[in-house]
Length: 340
Image (cartoon, rainbow, N blue to C red; front, side, top):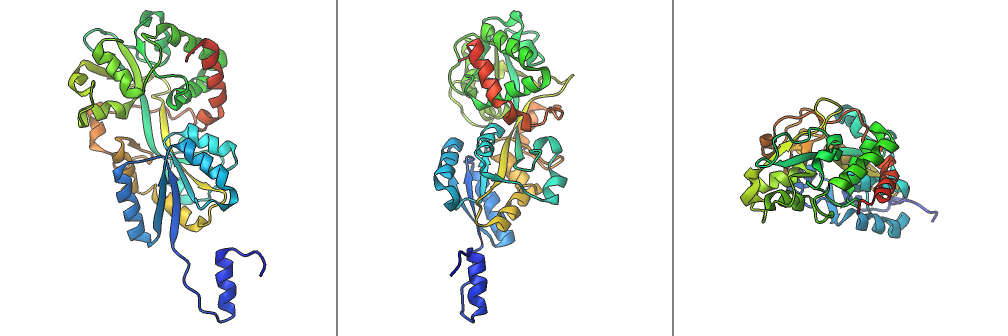
């Protein structure tokens, strides 16, 4: 028989009068998210649609390598990453298929979508400035101020290989241009209290331990210090204040958890149903609650744990797609100024 998809094969057999079983209603997800609330999200989707969700969870780089190895035989329908930068790698490898969905267009703000509809944001992660309330009277109010010589030897921040810093740098390139972005990165290096080390939680621990007076990190690492017992952070968390950067300008830099359909998806219709479901209020609440994130859909119910941080103006002028477009240049500039 000619090369047929499973769907067309069933149709062909049906024409001959041969009894065939119904096609399995499923969708296969490769996800770098690993939160318990995602289980509730997928269970609700299955209950509503009858479509079973099969998941493989791993680091985004591992999942993308697996997709490369599987090629056209990959069982994956949907890829989920916890930042736009990693999704950009899948885009560069030509793994993604553009979607057509009025639901997604209506629900997701334009700046949180890829311009060619290759991916979109399902939850938001803000990168903010923290400071020692006992030592810092007037903390920096913008990302740009972090490079001011007044903060020499006082800042804790992660390595340049960290995707959150790469995306922040990419946004600065988009806003100010390459030369200004390089000068900013050079200023940060001069102002570091120590060589970059550890994750965002370790930068906050640096304030508690007295190693630094100012730190940069995603908002949910701070919230976790309130909501659970985080060693080296929770006991001293009242010592830490926070600033929503650039409120008088472009707004606070926000990265994304993202979702995309794969070019070789064996269940594209079910994949599209799941991707649209991600934009529902129910799904948005589950996605935000799992990691104390903010919904991607405007006015969707979020999580009460983030209310302690107050309201803020996110950067809605810098397209999120710029994070991936400028990623390589961001790393090049980091390397040039010696940001390890």
